[in-house]
Amino acid sequence: MTSTRIAVTAGEPRAHVELAVGALAPRLVSRDGTRAHVAVAAAGMVLLGGDHVHVVVDVGAGCTLQVEDVGGTVAYPGARSSWILEVRIGAGGTLLWRGLPFIVADGASVERRSALTLETDARAVIRETLVLGRYGEQGGQLISALTVIDGDGPILLEELEVDGTVPEPGVLGHNRVMDAVIAVGFRPPARLRDLEFDRPGAMARHLSDHAHGSPLESVWDAWAAFAESRALRVNRSHDPDPRTVPPTERNFVDIAC
Image 1: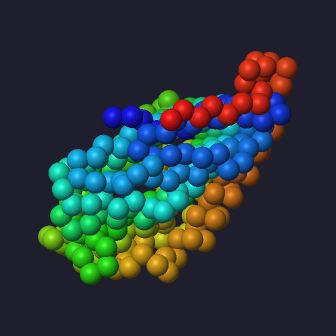
Image 2: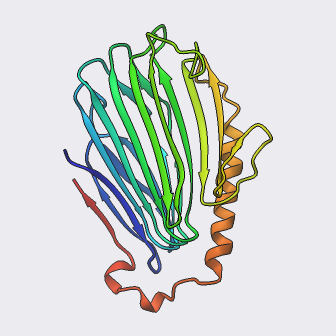
C-alpha cells in the first residue's frame, strides 16, 4: 500500500510543501510563508472492493494547511476496503479539511478511521459527510472512527458502525446522511444545539435522507474563519525568524509519484 502524504513546514518566502501520490493525488493550489492550500483527488478508481487507502498529513509548527476535497469518494461493492487518515499538527498549527461526501454503495463494506494528534496550541476544523448508498440505494456496511488526542489525553473518541440494509433506531434511524463539522483545539462559535466537548472543541451534526441543502455550510465557514483568526493571533507573537530557516526549505515543493 502506497501512502498519500501531505506535509507543510514554514519557509521564506514560501513554505516547504511535500506531496506524495498514493491512492489519492494531492496538488498544490497556493502557498505563502506559513500557509498552504492543497487539493486532493483520487489517482484512480477509489474505493474498489479490497482497496486500502492510507493518508498521512503533517502540519508544521505555526503553519496552516487547507485541504480541499475534489470529487468526493464512493466505496464500491466487494471485499472489505479501508480508508485510514493519520494527522499530526505541530505547535500553533492549523488544519482545515473540507471533505466532500463519502458514499457507501450497496454491497460495499468499508472501515474508515481518522486519527489526529495535536501539539500545543494546535487546532483543526474538519467537515465529514457520510452517505449510505447512491441514489435509490440503501447503502452497505460502514465502520467510521475518529480519534483526537493532544498532550493532555483524548479530546474526542467516536466510532459509528452502521449497515444500510439494517437501519437502527437511535443511531441513524432511516436517515442516509450524517453531516458533521468538528472543531478541536479551540472553542468555536457554537450554536445552542451543537455539542461542546469537555476539552476545547465542538461538533455540529445534521442527519438527513439527502446530502444537498445541509445547514452546516455556514457553520463550516464560521468555524474555519474563527480557527484561522485564532491562528494569526497565536502565531503573531512568535513568528519564526526567516534567517533560521535552512536555505533548502525556503522555496521548495517536493512531489513524489
